[in-house]
Image 1 (cartoon, rainbow, N blue to C red):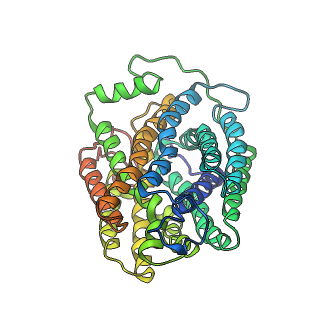
Image 2 (tube, rainbow, N blue to C red):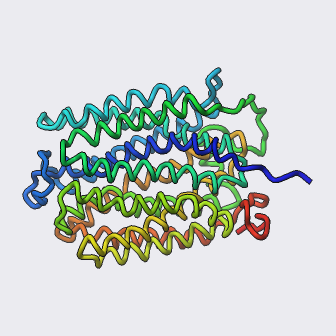
Image 3 (cartoon, helix red, strand yellow):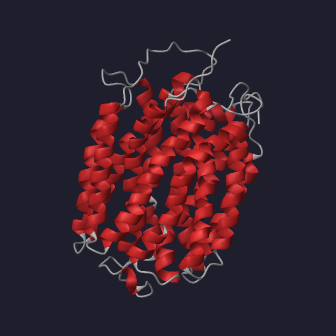
Length: 432
């Protein structure tokens, strides 16, 4: 009998530095860029405490969706291309080596553009987005490259713990630094991201990947061809899964993009306080990442995701009623736990449908679904706010509805035979 694969915590922990750096920069981006874009608008709280561009909610939502619009086209394409890349440094590392320094320099430059025409600020932001998209999928694809299928939920728990650590640093340290200078959080995000990617590049060794002969039963390598293969296949589970991913990111991306605006406008906090309040969510993510990885492996990935979506929808509904920062903290803690149950199991569940030589391409399909929704989320939710008189509180009902629809779609997902979860009482033999 073949012994079960062993979990190499040290290897996955080092790989997690890649996620830590990406999460640190994106958290700074999501926490502060919406504030800078809206600050100075007549109906937006003056407690933002910074010179900005006085943009409307719709315009800000459109800009906050730009990163996801670019990612929609770039991330899936790079995933497939990196599958076919063969260099002496590996398949994934060349993209990290090129993209990370460019992204760090552009992001550090962005706050120095404040006070200049918005085209200068947006130029730095767009370069950051394009450079980040060059290496995000290769970093994510390293996890299945290094981890056998049965251990991917626990591995994703470790990686999301590291990502949560990056988000905590962005919220706590970045929120405090903003009071010193609006420039400081951006320097923190850029420097932290670049340092983390250097650790990954020097400490992680990619496995050798020989060229694979094409199998007529294997999905084609291209992203669109792979998507067509999934959509036309007899098994509808991947279609339901990709649809569910779209809806839960419609809900989560809106919360991520608009929370600090909600806290400034509805809870009368200044920008630094709003970002630090968000740390209740990121600290919960950090604390729950490892337990949720183990829980997802024990319950089964599908069941873990559904439980997380239901709890997150309940937390979002409660968030609509909250009137103070003190009551918002426990809601954010529940939301963080719920989101981890979804996140640590979602990519491993997608990869359960992927042939071994197509992990980058199927990672790209995951991003195709998630980034489509993440692009639309800030736009749609921003329009909802405006329809209700610029009421940011509608954010929570919008998100709760999207999360509930995702949970319903997940009921249609049946896992492929043999894609087991480590630690489950049934040994992973169930299709559920």
